[in-house]
Image (cartoon, rainbow, N blue to C red; front, side, top):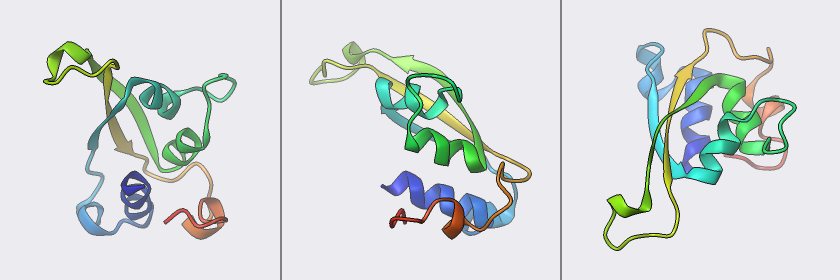
Amino acid sequence: MREFRYLKEMSRREGAWALGRIPLLLTFQKEVADRIVAEQESANRSRIGVVSQYVAEPKIIFELPGECFTPRPKISVGVVAFEPRVEPLIKAPWEVSCDSDGID
């Protein structure tokens, strides 16, 4: 997933993040956006949320209903802002924290 590449660069302060703590905005299906921002004890918590919250503070900024698009999808879209953390939640290299089975 391209999102993981961005998060990896964010954690290493590479690419655009070599210039500082630059926020990232991405769109996702609403259900995926909900998983990204899910709290630790939530039933919606998933791997993409854990990895995202490791290096950033993701927040759903707003939702776009399917009616905003042509052709109309049956789903809504969540716009998620990723604000890079000053320090990752886990003080370990990306490979130890997130790459155990090939997230690249």
